[in-house]
Length: 402
Image (tube, rainbow, N blue to C red; front, side):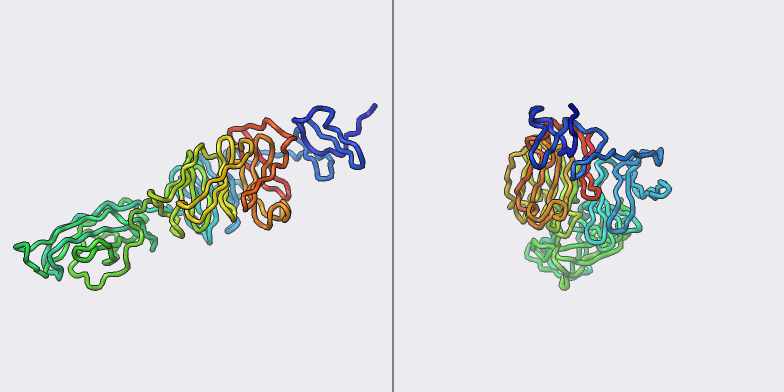
């Protein structure tokens, strides 16, 4: 007797053969596998569309910016801008591996193994600035400084963006005796050589006499070799970026609560608020118990993939974050994407964007409040892969696995 095949309800490799066919008023049929076909919401089959080779070049990490509509890719570690009509490309910068993109305000931020970069629609430039070496100090005359101890530090500037402040160098200005309050002294500052040709200026900070807080003395062209600090009666603002370091890149990069976050191995690192190029090595990180397989911020926290489970982090500051383990199957590496409420429905999404990833038992949805929905639990099992990538096409999520 012929077997009616429609409508199909999807794949099921968990239940017995007898459970694949369901009768009643709404009969359905599950299949063990579905190769090169798409199953519609009404249970009909459609042959999956094929493809054609459009270029012999091996582009990787192809991504289109929603900001400028530019198409980016990498070619042998080089970030390129691609013309999708001719598939020719323009070299922008060497960024290496682990390439990620993020749009923040009016800039595209790029993560690579060679560092972090920003693109403004015309040019690409490094995001971070190396912390300068300490300046050399010498006592001099012809000034208004009194005897006592002073501290000096410097920072590089690139078109107004300031690096972390260097380590402070101290100098003791002395007179002819311990009680000599000579007030005609000055400090001669010898600036280090800057190897970054994108740096435009250098800022100099100095403390008050026998003080500990750094205040801005002045800003000079980066070509300046020496500066004389001869009076400190009109110092500027306090140094803002002391005890910080350049923000490191990672295998993952996202934006969360005014911070850029990167992740590598089992460590998540958080940039300073609204200063994406800087990072606090003392407090700006969070250690995870296992290797990180994805990170995806949502309104209420951050979903983090682990080797055999997922974690939901909540809190407004890295040091205040709360760790909650969720009981799910092992997620597939790098399969997570952000989906909007329209795709999954308001009743499930709670009117907020959600994280969606592929696990050993199918797709899993993580809401903005930390709840999970396992769409294929009891239907799929045994999905494994070393690498993956998810993309939304219309109302369908497609995940490629390797």
